[in-house]
Amino acid sequence: MPLSTDDKNININDVTTINKDMLDVALSSGSFDRFMMATRAQLKDAVDNQEITQSEAGTALAQSIVGVLNASMEFELKRISSMADVALKEKNTELAQAQIVLTERQTEGFDDNKKQKLFEAQMNSWALMFSSGTLTTKPAIISNDSVSDLYNDLVS
Image 1: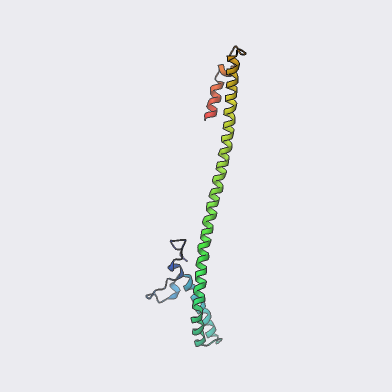
Image 2: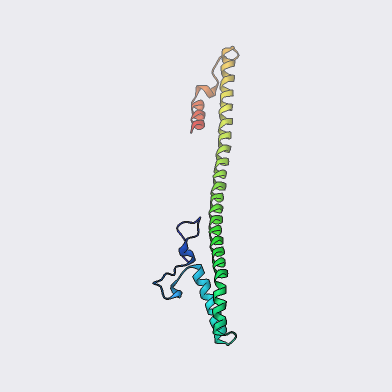
């Protein structure tokens, strides 16, 4: 059965594709048409097996039209609801994946922040000790490329 282009409303072509130029119901793809085909087939079988008369079959067919139309509308509403559920589940999956990525990045950010705070504390401690005269020489980490390497590691 073809899906309508508007997934939020019932498209008449999803219910019936019969028109005045169409003579063969079997070519129809609408849910109402398919349900009516099944109803007609059941009634024809009952007439062929002499369970009911042709007149009774005609009456039963006329009486069944409203029920079949209601069933086809309910079928289409459930189809649309099912498609909406699938779309919602896909969006929820995308959201869950985005939340995982966000959590991972936040964790990395916390780690980066911790490293930066530690680097800042070490530099401030050295600067305080050097300016107060406690240290008279630069520590090895300052005099070689270790600080630059640490800084580059933090910013990359």
